[in-house]
Length: 168
Image 1 (cartoon, rainbow, N blue to C red):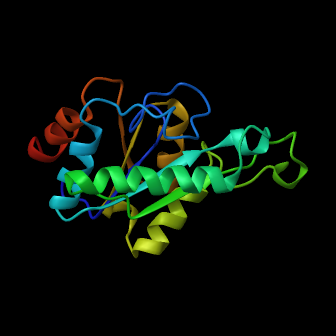
Image 2 (image 1 turned 30 degrees about the vertical axis):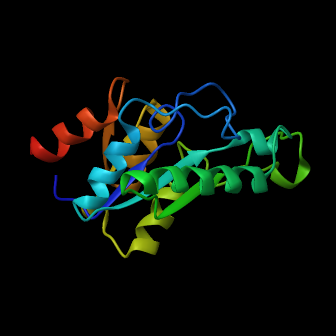
């Protein structure tokens, strides 16, 4: 896999998806996730996260809490030699409880806005990127951006990533 940019979904890829995870106490790493991120960074990849966070629009937590969690995630990853270069998240939701986030946007997956923004920020073409996600909406968003997508259906993320990188 010769990609400059690796886009990861968050819940279900990096952490166990327990629904609306927004604190370190709720976070449980997917097996091999810290090692996978470190491996990708060691291979020269820019690793970013693209994640829907509708809990913000639902009034369950704030953007500040999400940003704080993401800082904590990076602190944990640095222990392994990895780092997420940037976290992109969509706080929007049609008919949201919090009026400021009540909209139809181009960033909420399966729309491709977060992916295309990440491509622009990294000065990458779609051919230079790959997305690893765990849901159909991740795959659809990736396809809409013209980016190769790989479906992670569980197990050890490090093993999955090594197979992608070393197997191609």
